[in-house]
Amino acid sequence: MESVTCNSSHLPTTSPLGERTHPQVQVTYGAVQTALSKALRGERLSFEDGVNLYHSPDLVELGAVANEMNNRKNGRDVFFNVNRHINPTNICALSCKFCAFSRKPGEEGAYAYSEDEIAHKARVAAESGATEVHMVGGLHPRWKLSNYTSIIRTVKETAPQLHVKAFTAVELDWLARKERKTIAEVLTELREAGLGSLPGGGAEIFTPYVREKICDTKLTGDGWLDIHRTAHRMGLRSNCTMLYGHIEDVEARIDHMMRLRALQDETSGFNVFIPLAFQPENNELGITRHTYGVDDLKTIAIGRLMLDNFRHIKSYWVMTGDRVAQTALHFGANDLDGTVVEEKIANMAGSRAGMAMAKSKILRVIRDADRIPVERSTVYEPIRRYENPAEDIIQ
Ligand code: V47
Ligand code: SF4
Image (tube, rainbow, N blue to C red; front, side):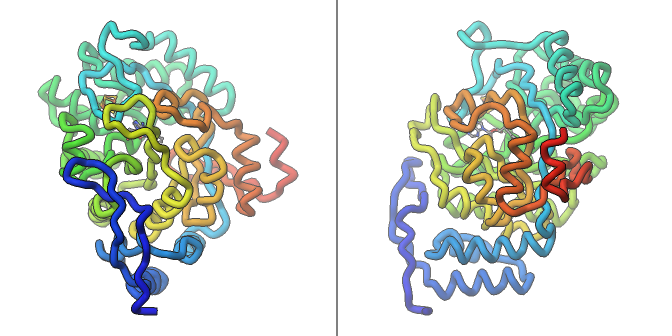
């Protein structure tokens, strides 16, 4: 099989102008086999292995190896959580070219929730059984650190049992620079207010030649990693993401994963890796196509194989829809995220998945994939294992 050349004409590659091209990449089937065998032996994959896996001609074989590696770590259990997204404002000082969510002050559709509105959303969430509030938003030019601590306090005073997973490294960097404080000082104040952990947003693609084209005024990739390093050293856990399916090439994706792997080696502070499929409406990149299932599944599987020091890989149904998200549970993913309730970021960019998923539906999606649903906390402690299907309807 060594001499077989893989036809990878469907894979994204970036031209110097950041446009998609479709080259014939010369990757042998033997190189793919070498990478898969290394993974099965528990050996760490190299950059070349990762790129070669993207050119694998056999999706099912790649998925089977990723499934096996997930099975060794997590068995048949699949996590989900009952959560609520609150995006406090979409007013943002930056203009990332991929972003359909942000608005300038005074622009049509710009909003900023009052503390009463945030309290109401948190109260309803807690009453419906949520354990987590996920909060990220724009970089509001007039908001100070005291606005952010006050938002967290509002949620905690309304429902102390809710875990507040809030504010991306981009928001933290913005606050620290505005307040002339260190990231550690900002995090200390937010933690005193009730911050529980950090979400994974703002990572996009770390690799400079892509980042410069999609969000040139944003915190750099190294800056993002530094902030998560600081959080981990302070004992705060965090998530990490990768935005794919826009102008990046597969080399940039693997480079991104390797930078996350290196930080996880150092701190073990990441809970989970979350690939985010790009939603293509209303952006300034000129991209109009959604990702397809094969790329979504490859990205989950390769994430599982490259990130050998992560226990959890999330298949985020909001970005791929429930069908691909469910299939990904056979391609190395062991987490579906949550009920979400009010998703705005992907929705404003044309997500076809809807804003919420009922807990009863999440249970069914996982059960129908022949997996066992396990409700988890934000930091992946099991809350309830739904061993018996008869329990699914009793909520
Ligand atoms: O940083 C923005 C991404 C992120 C688009 O930590 C887009 O558990 C797709 O990070 N198409 C914010 N993605 C959301 C996020 C997240 C979501 C769910 C769970 C967690 C977690 C984190 O959304 C941004 C950016 O990378 N994003 N625009 C778009 N058009
Ligand atoms: Fe602002 Fe975040 Fe959108 Fe960039 S991605 S424009 S920082 S809201």
